Image (cartoon, rainbow, N blue to C red; front, top):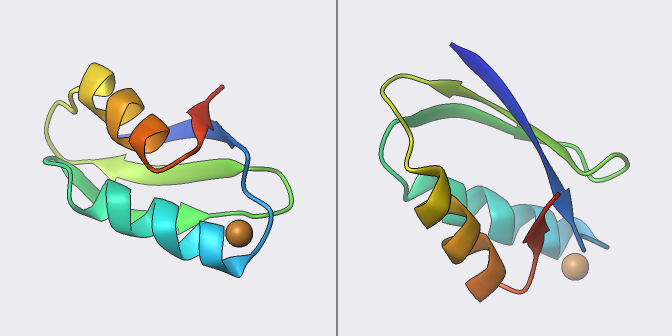
Length: 66
Ligand SMILES: [Cu+2]
């Protein structure tokens, strides 16, 4: 299943790479696409993703899930 989330706080390609890395380490997420302009991140949810953990990891990295 395709899923989209909004990440707040990305300002450059370094941020994009960081967010990509954080998400790629989480279980159940494949084919991540991060759009810097909009902050929209789309990914394939291949098995149920722990969204609380996702939020925690993103905020630990210095960003926010909108
Ligand atoms: Cu940046």
